[in-house]
Image (cartoon, rainbow, N blue to C red; front, side):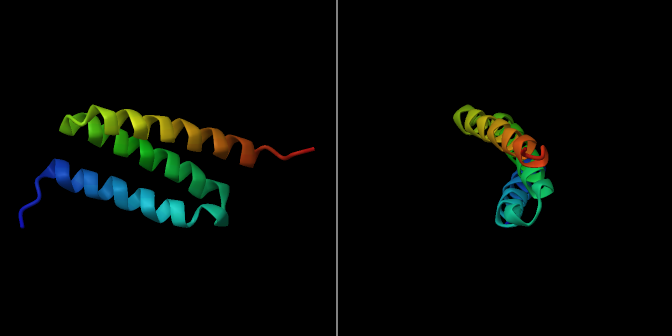
Length: 76
């Protein structure tokens, strides 16, 4: 099996998404890492020409970043 650079990048992005999602309840920093991984997944989607995947991952990135923002600010 031969993987080109784009496929390896996509594999890295979705693996990072899986790992950081699984660890999200350990620290808000994993939520931020998940947001970054979703952004990488979005870049991958656009680069491979699957723009619907790229758009959905971009939205997930924003949702996760907002979740991280609300988790890191202490509630009163």
